[in-house]
Length: 69
Image (tube, rainbow, N blue to C red; front, side, top):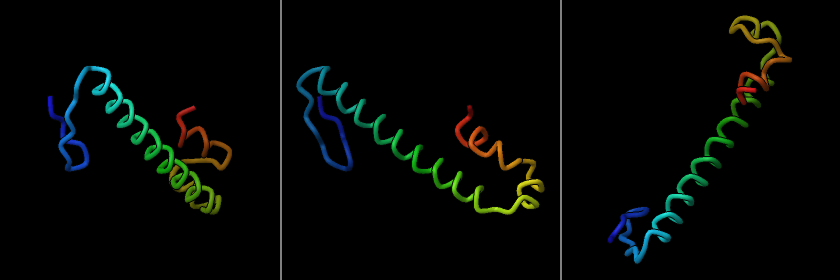
């Protein structure tokens, strides 16, 4: 089986190799999502209280809104 990863063909010899590529892809996606959420949290924390109120968020709730907790 041949799989294209980052514009390169990679020959897969068994299902384990393909599973590794899937895990690596999920890890990269998780890192990207984490970095995005950190940027959003930082930007929201830099707003003043009036601006946060305009978008319906209280300063104490920023983390919950960003991380869904």
